Image (cartoon, rainbow, N blue to C red; front, side):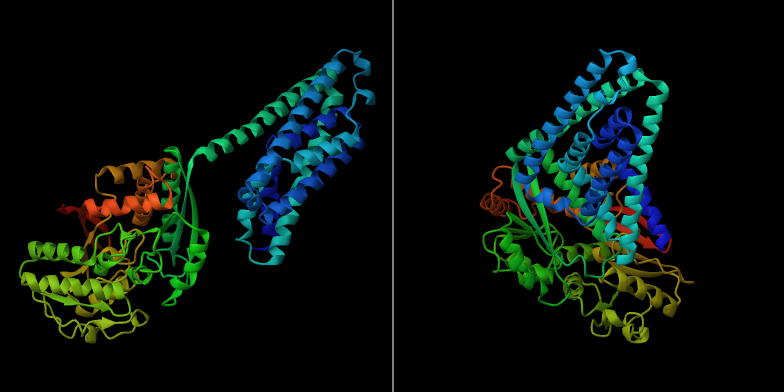
Length: 564
């Protein structure tokens, strides 16, 4: 973005920040209709300077202080509310006094607001309104991260300051000349409207204290999110946003049911033991529950490191998770369960066809899931080719020899690719171009992701191919949880959900809120988890698998495979 564009953007955002009806504008209008023009503009400039200073600290993120230091927020709300009420009553009294004297004297400076009083009120109304600071931080602070350099930031704030000064001086001039033209009745009307708005705003600000008190009576559950969402190569750019949307929606639903969730994220990098380096920070925060890593490898590393807190993973599926301490749990089916269902699907729909496996060897989840499938296939009498020939590493996905990967492949084989979305999408296109057969079929899993946000099928080739995959989590199911989530998502975001990770993260938080229903303490949540595991091993897990046919033109839902 150019410097000029940044400056103009600052002006536009500055106007959206300054223009809405508020206490500052009411004060400017009142002073413009009662003070001489020179003094009124001086007051407007002073108020604009305060507004610029407020905008600057909002830009730097001051809203975080008020959102985190609750006593400070309460004190300022109380003082600000009292000041607004006082100013509203004072404006009403002076307006009524002005109406009781002859009209020719009603514009006299003796009835005007003193300039020092306007300045003092301007300072108070600017700094004694924490909601203005929070709103300003949202409007200006959130834009800060998108600015490329410090120079862009400076010109952005210059635009905001330009907008503030221009707005208040223009408003003062227009209202002053309007008062001169329309006379005492106009001034009287402005006075009554201003006093009414100020008094209503004081009650509105005071109501925030009531909301705060109500929030304090709610049960508060601290939930830590421990994952590598910011560093992992994900199935799509929207993945993280959709994951966090699911968390947000579940938090809102919990609040409706009297449970306040305090969510904090702890992200780590891709180093093999990175999750253990972040863990001390998580434990120092003393969460009541932890949403653990989606990766089975990272999730398994935590076994024994956390003993008195429930740790629930959205997607970890390694079979060995069942052997972890009883405070660990995953709401997704195990690799063994998934592989068994996929073998059932192959045996029923592709009778007599053999399997050529291709495996992403540096993805432990991919290796484990493929091995579980091969074990289950052997027990079911399905012929499988050599697993060693089809191994590759993710970094070589675009250069690895297709001839080597397909060394044991025989015509009419199904190609098993239980790998991640990015590598599966690339290899499917390369293999299709290499084999040049019209009826090539790949078998995949959850790792492919939805067609709309994943990679499989996105690369066009002259030789059509298709993939068949099972998915434990699906928007095409008609169960109550999925339907409820879709309704909530549509209401909040005015669109249909597409990425399944939003439903999965929502379901993970929903599972924790169910555990916290009777006792929201850390030990209460953990005890409920232990009881659920004893009574029902599939607590929070999906009860069926959806079948999808994937091609270069899209994805089709083919029904349910298995009903538990």
